[in-house]
Length: 355
Ligand code: PHE
Image 1 (tube, rainbow, N blue to C red):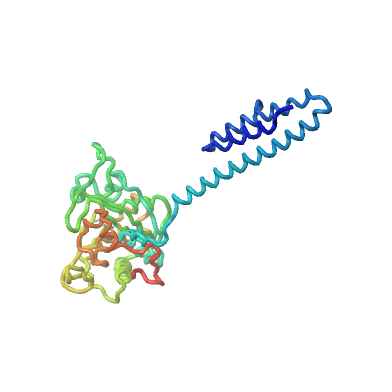
Image 2: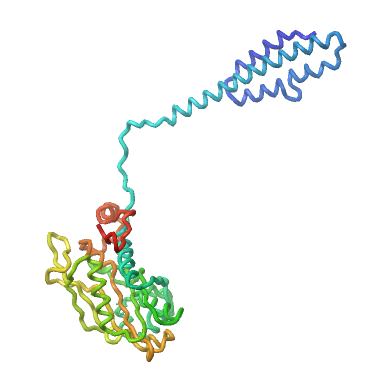
């Protein structure tokens, strides 16, 4: 008969000496695996005669139970040690003061786009969009601006290829054509978006934002245009009265055409709207030229209307007292923290546009 006591103390001392989980697994195989010590002992049972079998089997079973218990305890010890180690390493000191960190703000231009969209949607305008990369046709020709027309130079166009077919749109007016070709009149849309011109100073940036407006229906006249713009400007600046002036101007795609300036003054280095004797041009507008309507498959004998293009960055400068346009696009986090808006304060007409 085997010396079970000896086997037991051998195995247990081996287990006790183990210092990591992996060697414990390999010892487990040495004991209970296919050719393991205890497995081999079990195999022997069949070679014993009846009288030996009973005692042998019962001793072997209790050996197996003891060894299993010791093994399981050792495994549990390792797991507990692992947990203790993690707890120690991942401990959070809740008494440490929090780090102040910048939580993200809405850029004044995004804020202004939300505000103007809210104002115009209340008087029946829907929102359209067009691509930043335009064709020469949509940006100029379809808008009654033939080749060699001085307006093409005045726009300081960024062309994207030698043939001058593709360009970065110089205004949002191509969205007028795209909108009209897509559908049937009447049209009452606004189109906010990025625009590009090779120009840079305190009030010009090579990338800037415009809002196009287009209203085409039967019997629309210049009075509707003025009414719409007065309404918009008053709502936007949240005042009863704003100094505004319409100057006769020229755009190939409108006839007659006008430019609109807003009165302001600078007080303590900040812009104040509605007072003072300085003027900032914010808008071009006019009655849509019959040729433009024709190019967009609209019959100018039946339908007329107005269009306008507003400089959104300039509106933001005026409303929020920012006097250098270039800072808008420098991504200076301190500037954004100061001039930015709370992401949860979505502008609406009934709750107020800005606070
Ligand atoms: N597209 C013109 C510009 O960028 C503005 C404008 C739009 C004028 C619509 C008239 C009508 O200067």
